[in-house]
Image 1: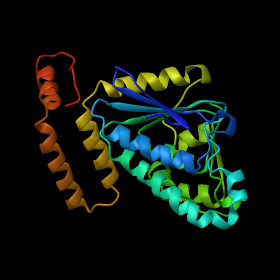
Image 2: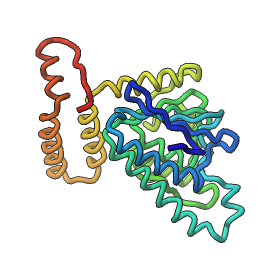
Image 3: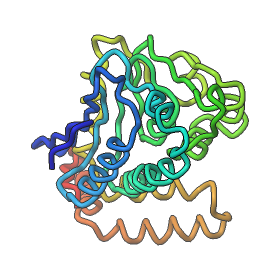
Length: 263
């Protein structure tokens, strides 16, 4: 499919590269973005050849979040529009979270509002030193969406995430790293190289095991201990029957590096 707000490229290395391309508008979250984000998520989640996803954005700003200019032009229609947009956006977020393929993000400049929440949901977040994560919502009298309440709480803890939203904070890269929002800070010139390096490493790994790990980490905060232990047991038993798990054991026994194929 062809998209107007983003570009999706799938390489032979198993890494799908998703790039936000509306540079002149600061890569905003609007109706088009929400619809296309959902379509991309559906496309990626149905492609067994995708073993890792790298998300990046063109321009100085990763994303300014919601399209405020559009909001101002359609104030009376906003409640209905928001329900329409979030139906797409939230489904896209959910579909990406349920994939086996891990997600890496390379963040530069400003990452604000709902985009900060969406990026908090990736598995490995790499940022350059000048990056700023802006809460944004309370500053315009709004509450959060795009999974922000869940993803930022998982990343930073409930107390820090609540403070971030209520005080409309802006976190620089170092503060975000200390809070757990950012996994690595690398020089701007090395940002894309490092993110590609991580994505390629994940794409060469045991994809089904990664998917089980992602889902277990998601359910850990919600399940009682006994339920989570059973979820771990069921997932591990299922993974034990995969070709990658057998290859991993054989490689360990033969003292060589495993060659995972994602199955």
